[in-house]
Length: 274
Image (tube, rainbow, N blue to C red; front, side):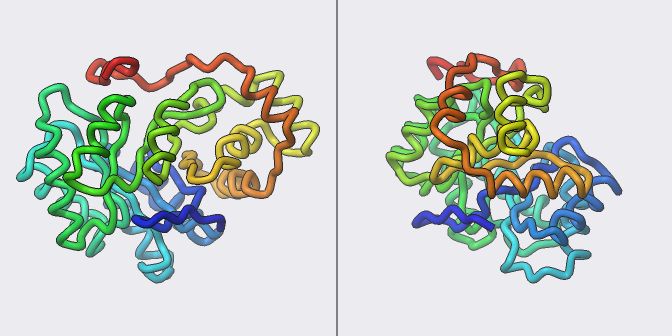
């Protein structure tokens, strides 16, 4: 498995996203993925599946130190005590002593940024989060978080796919050697019907989803966490790691419109000015 390595973490480039899987389906997906070679599993308090993710990990028989597990605290708990309680609850559900990466899932308009980052730092110093990061932070807020100096931000996780440009965020991440994780990396499977992506897939003898993932994963420091419940799709996603897009492929995908945001709830930050 290709790895991302920085001063703050060592993370498999391709992971298993578990939203919105629940119950037995989620546990089975985690077991299947680990058996297939996945070592990066992404969950969150809000997903309501941490117990099933933990059960899948336990059933896999793979040593804990061979796995990279991420979870996240919801935006209603971004205080020192709230974050401490959230990670304790997540670890109890996962039945783990620590997570490899602990994120703020969404920023809150009412949060005290330094206090929220301080909560992450407390977890990091205690060793129950080996690294910490943030999700869904727009560029200005992300830079503030990074430059606040409260805790070392190891990773940014945001929506990113062939239809949504995230160049400003990637530039900040590269400037500070921060890993960049893409969720909804296939545009919620919209790429399956895209004629440009389909044409490139035909050229490579692959699928549109594999091409969309390959376009993301070709960049240093970028990881992706596609959701895949079944073994067939999990295996296909792993296949994206061996696809080498040429300059013409990349240019054609780069030319696609890049303003299609698929995840923007009412509580989302101001994506442009936030």
